[in-house]
Amino acid sequence: MTGTVAYEANPAYPPLGDAPGATVLRGWPHAVATLPSAPFVLAIDGPAILDWSALVTGITKALSGAGTSAEWLDLRAHFAPWEKIVAATESAALPEDPDFATLATHELGDLFEELPEPDPTADPTAGRSALVVFGPGAALVHHDVLWYADLPKRHAEAAVVDGTGRNLGQTDDAGAGTTKRLFYIDWPILDRHRDAIAGRIDRWIDTRDSANPSSLDGETLRRTAAALATRPFRTRPTFNTSSWGGHWAQQELGHNPEARNTALGYELIAPESGVLIGQATGAQVELPFQLVVSQRPVEILGERVHAQFGTSFPIRFDYLDTVGGGNLSVHCHPQSDYMRRVFGWPYTQHETYYILLGGEDRQVFLGLKDGTDLEVFHHRARTADDHGVPFDIEEYVQTFPATPHQLFLIPAGTPHGSGEGNVVLEVSATPYLYSLRFYDWLRRDEKERQRPVHVRHAFANLDRRRRGPAVREQLVQQPRVLRSGTGWHEELLGSSPEMFFEVRRLVVEAGRAAQDDTDGRFHVLNVVEGNGVAVETASGHRHDLAYAETMVVPASVGPYLVRALGPDRARIVKSLVTS
Image (cartoon, rainbow, N blue to C red):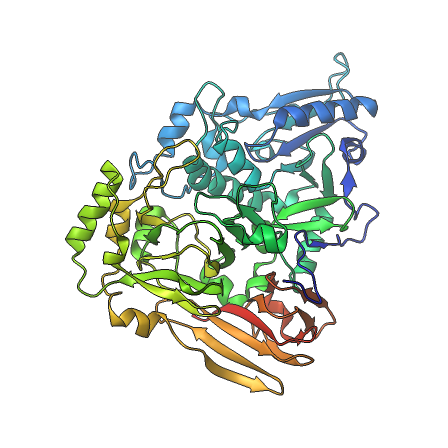
């Protein structure tokens, strides 16, 4: 779809600082030029998945070119033995579960046998003028300068999936890394550590190009995060492939044209999204969105939301693209007590489906059929998983037409899934790694293994109340006008007492502007119809938003206008925390 504003796959924002170094630098020599001339200890922290060998090679060459000799201390050699790390992080609630683990609560320092104490003084006889301590946890030892070298999480997942990536503390002889440890053990530990040291980082290094990385000084990083917290901004969208994936995002938005599909579109997903800092056509660094939130949680989330969720950004927007693909699995998400007790996440995964593209001949799976025999359903699901025997899921789960612009509420425990031929804008709570599958059509993965389902977890969380006519009455709601003005109105599309957020829609006629106000709580916006909008704040910021793009409006923004661009009416999905 074309319009006045074109979809931007790489939205970027300028760095903000008051010093000459307030710019994104490119290359190791420029980063090394910012180091002190006297003998020093440089600590370089970062995730386990980083190409640390390439980093050492690049910095060694740059230091040598600057006339600085260095010794190197690899902190990874000081991790506890791998068997001890595995035992220490074992999930008591999920022993030997092949797919899930309880979120790790450990600190990074817990994974070391003993941290070294590097000597900060130069050794004149060795000619050393710098000691470089590198690896995950380097910030935990004595240092004079702290750098953080990062690689966005999508690269970590890809490396583990293709067998080249290792987990946190894992040695090369300990087998292949697993996404299970990556998602539930490594990332929580590393994110906590990164956010804790963020106020002390002297330079942020983006190693997507390990031979020629981009970097930003720490003070500018923090000033830029503070500036973003006062204005609307977007995160960098990412599309992943899956066995059921479609091609809408490739065909309409230009994402990943060489990929086999564009199944999952992460428009805004706090644990993985990044914010690009730099010039649109120049050097850029990608900062984790979660890091930006942790720097300014009250300004971004709002005081009440921060009190409830800490630094966790609790709403996510993503796309489920099945155009030319297949049905999603029929699955549910953990109920609140199970999520806390078993998986370790403090709030659960309520969802909604907004049908961006569908039709009367397309469908959404939602809720149990009236009269469903759950024992038979369970037996059929188990037999399919254990013996590869297919069954008709529609004997047990209802279907509804995938009518464009209809919203479906999906409280935790409700069986659901999108059918083939749809584009779903999923407006949901932030947890996203807990799809408990009842049935996945006996699909096979890239290695021809039957994709896992999670019958035990799924039936343990199944909400048996979501059946029959109650599903349509409670979960397929019709729009209700909340407020209006000249040429615009705001509708409530869906809310439920058990869900902490609700989904609304602004409808703005061509040439008109809707008035809005964050009123102390962040908003998330997505243009679902029209030529795009301009979001204009009372402080003078303007940010255009194209069809299919997603934007964060921080709580600190206060009053703002949403102005329709182009000759057509605009419709904008909006979500906010309400409880």
